[in-house]
Image (cartoon, rainbow, N blue to C red):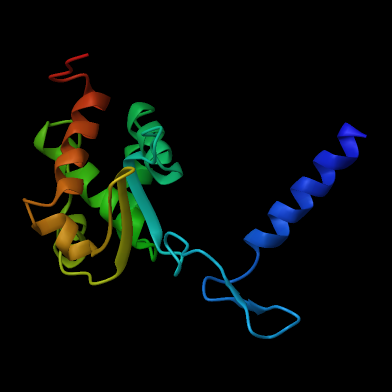
Length: 168
């Protein structure tokens, strides 16, 4: 019996999650509307977060880039400078710039030109930090606005990867 209830419960959850953000359902008496709650990131932009949600976890894209850096797969990082995905463009740009500054990689003239192009991209990224900070920013804003909190978090993230200035 417990197993059947679990399956029914999961079915209801999955069904309710498949409706779009602005769905409304009219009841049989057509006087009452049920409105779905708003959904974070409704346009499904790339999601960047160094400490998202209540648990403060890194997003999948952050984990992927962390692994590339730790495994020293620098060519893959450089290749993503040319990605069509804004989250990858942002992370590859900040990562390759930081690695070059640290003297861990060298960037050629083509890569440096691409970094300059990336600094002017207006593609949108959804950012999150904890349960209170979230927003939509362009790649240009995240790379150039030194007051943006996500930019500060990116610096802390990179320092943590490199084992620098860690206080725990």
